[in-house]
Length: 209
Picture (cartoon, rainbow, N blue to C red):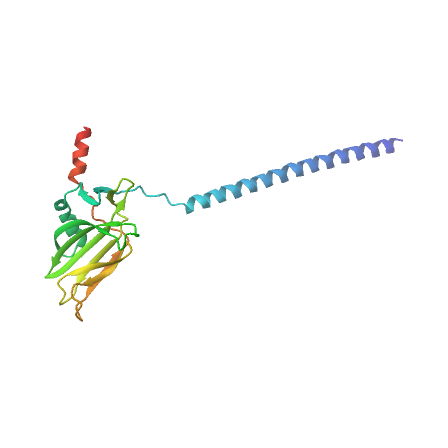
């Protein structure tokens, strides 16, 4: 009788112990799964964050505006001579700056370029920087504007930019004689107005004081 009572007690204790072990296993397993999910989500967020590159702020500078197909200069062309000389960086002396429209046909959307012309050691040099056109036809130059350069070779007195649609594609000598060549150089960016404060910007800044 006593042995049967001990057997029943031992059976009950073992059953309760087994139940506790099962509950403990369930809690541990659930916690581990939750932790793995949290680590995976954190890892994915971290990977996405590492891949994202913050967009650089737009640094466009207002130079002019198109009014009835005519360019009105907000920044004087003389003020841009020295920045062009610095941008060439090879001793080129720039004596003309202008904004020119490029449009092969009326069906092409017009594009606008800031152009600097000069000479170096008797050879012709030119540079054209692509401008951004706003909805109100304001013309801005940013550091992300493409840069085209033309350099005349021996026997060529002047180089023209060639274009297709509204994009500059190369350079061509005014003389088609053999050996009269122009070299075209292209860069996706420019630093023409880096560290340059324009007079128009100084006037706007003074008016706010």
